[in-house]
Length: 401
Image 1: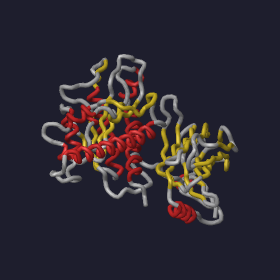
Image 2: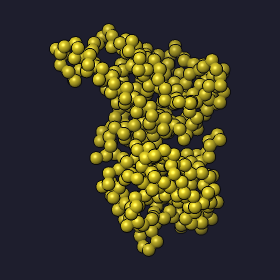
Image 3: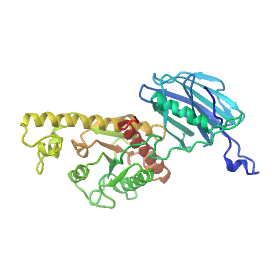
Image 4: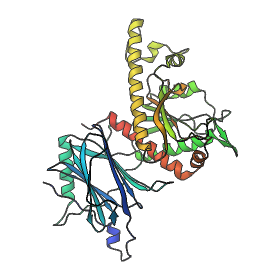
């Protein structure tokens, strides 16, 4: 059965005689799709309410926004790329409602949906991330949405945006995320006019990111430093490894000799950086210690080398997955560098048993980036996106059965 739940005004507004504010218009609708995920982005004249519903016969997802107009009414389109969404339609479904209907090629579910306030030259946005679902999950979502409807005119309460670090998908256990604010103490990192120091910017950002992740209730979170403390690089790596972190994120904001270079990026370990990796494994630990719990100490050195190489490969793959998930969430929120997922020889990414990424927030050598780095609104927006990326990464590791 295909029954569409309609978006209605909030209950408080229904009881309030105060006139509703003027509704925004829908500026643009974009859909991208791959076999692993899809994304709907709706550019809006202002933030507004929205609702989501799953429909069958055929399988669809419908997204309603409270809006007075749409730039291209009755529009049909194909998503960028090929995957779980085969097509979409946009229509002015009612004077106060614009609907986007996604036709699914496989069963799918909403992973997270959230609103972004206008920022710089970007309009307000609704972002909806979609991932595969089993046929049973999709059928349950359709039944749930039908159960919400009442009377001959179906109604749905406006959908609450997914909080930063949250998800519509459960995870079985709380992963430990270790956040590493770069530099500290006698090591100020990059600097700019007016006494602005990288170590202070990245600490403030890391504290905000920690707060968002803890508030989500999905993660245990630790910082390598919570104040202006100096830590050697090997101490930062050791903290993540000793505490068996599930993800290590190092936060930086560097300078560059070309002031026009700007934007955020995410680094993983260089595939050829084995000489630096060997430094991590030196001195107090050996290769057998690294794979403790995976192999007995008496095994032949050649076997140890094979197991260590397998571990390295697995961590590199997971690190790349984490970097991709983070960039995917940063993309609609902040300016990114060209090819934002990058590789480099950063020492802090050398743990062979902890997925590790380094996030460059921007460049103190660029005036626009520096202005953003000093704004609490930009910091909150970027930390929010990073928290969503972290949540998406762990969702990909813990698909709901």
